[in-house]
Every structure is written in C-alpha cells, then in structure tokens.
Length: 118
Image: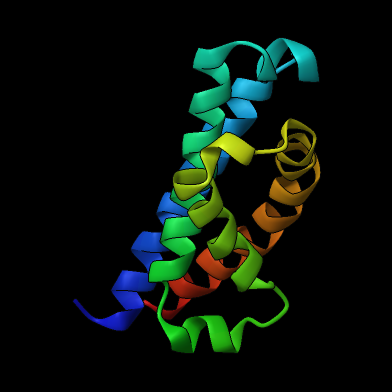
C-alpha cells in the first residue's frame, strides 16, 4: 500500500473513533459516563484506536505534522492496553473533552489535504 493511502486510511480510523467519542459523550456528565463500565470501556477503546492509528501513520507524515505531539497519543494507547488498572478517570475525561476536540481540528485538516492530493 502506498504511504499516501496508508496515511489516509489511518486518518479515517482516527476520525471514526473521534466521531464515536463525540456521539458517546452526548449530554452525559463525567460521572455518568465514567462510572458505567460499558460506556467507559467503549470510550477507552476509541482512544486506543486513535493511539494505534497514530502509531501506524508513516514517520514522514508525523514528521511533516509536528504541530501534533504524536508521542503522548501513542503512549496513551499503550497505557490503556497494558496498564489499564492505573487509568486515571480524571485524566481520561480531560482527554475526551479537551484533547480529542483539539486533535480533531488537526486531523480534519490533514484529511482534507490528503484528499486534495489524490
């Protein structure tokens, strides 16, 4: 698969996960979402997808888009998968409500740029 197509596909995965997060957050409060296991782990899974897809973006793509600090996104996926017992629900909430909306702005722009290059 050409690198360009690979990056486009990974950006689609990130945008899809962000959409699921946005749909899941809806009008729920932090305690309503994070204290219901099904919702909680569904949100965690979407953050894992974002981290894995970010890791699978080509190094060249990440190097061209340094305005996003990719390493914490990728590292968070590892923590969620391998050290799940120590997840901070407060940090997770900040990620969901602050970091994800900020990331979305960048990913949408990158995706539009890639589509324009096709």
